[in-house]
Length: 134
Image 1 (cartoon, helix red, strand yellow):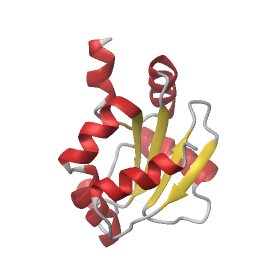
Image 2 (cartoon, rainbow, N blue to C red):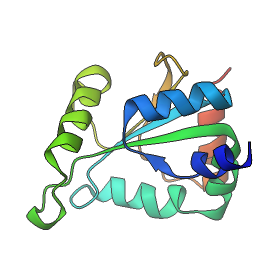
Image 3 (tube, rainbow, N blue to C red):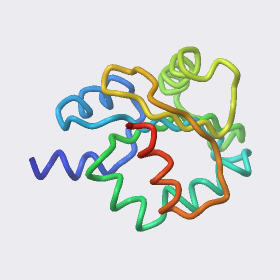
Image 4 (tube, one colour):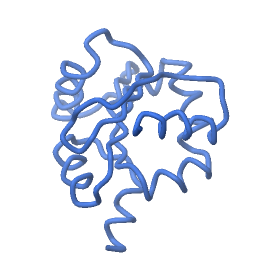
């Protein structure tokens, strides 16, 4: 059980891996669409929320984290297989191409709620995400 808690703290980049972890740990999935090297609100969300100690502490025991990144700079390009995985996630969950887009999904991939960047504290952002869980 301890090893799965450590695993849950990191960002997954593969839907199947995230879904398997979520089911094993009975957690929902936090799916984030980001443009890590061009989207200013995405960068703010990462620095202000995802990297905050409050968020990291809460998320590790409650959500399986999944990131679909779409960098534009040549130096930051992802391998083709990862680009394809991210594109498949976007086809299903982000057809309009919103960045950042944050979705809370159940372990089967059903959307519980969605949001984007908000200029609020990590504590308030956690409360917003928790509100999607009912």
